[in-house]
Amino acid sequence: CWSRRVIDEEVQDLENQLNALEDMIGGREEKRFGPTGELLTLQDTCHTVTAGKYDYEVCIFGQAQQKDLGQVSGTSLGNWKSFSIDKESGMRVMKWEGGQKCWNGPQRSATVYVTCGAENKLLSADEPDTCRYELHMESHIGCDYQYYQRHLSNAD
Image (cartoon, rainbow, N blue to C red; front, side):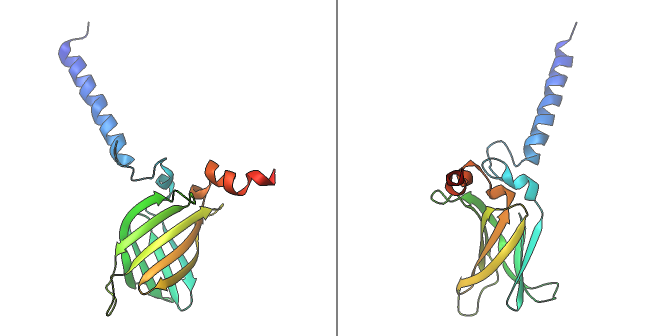
C-alpha cells in the first residue's frame, strides 16, 4: 500500500523532471525554439559567409559579427533578438540587435532570411541601409508544407 508521503515524493520527482525538460526546450509558454521547435537543431551553432572584404558570422542565440577577412574578432552586429515567420512569404526571419553604434548613425543590426535548403549555410550578406545588414541563409528549417505549396506543388 502506498503512503501519502511516497506518492507526494513521486509526484514532486515527476514535476521536477517535467520542469527540467521544459527548461531544455525553452519553457512551456516561451517559443524560444520557434513555433514548431525548428531552432532546436540549430541552437548554439555559428554560420559564416564572405562578402567583399568581410566575413559575416551569425551565432544562433548568440552574437552576429562583421570581421575583416581572416580576423578572429570583429565589429558587433548585435545580440540574438528574435525568430519569427513572415506571414506573407512564410520565410523564417532571425534578428540580432544592439550592435556597435555606427559613426553618426544607428546601432548595427542584422536580419537573416532563411529559405529551404539541404545544408545550414549563409549564402550572402549585404548592407542595404547604413549599419543594417541583411543576410540570406538556406536551412532545413525553411522547408515546410507552406514552402512546398508555394514552390513545388505546381511542379507535380
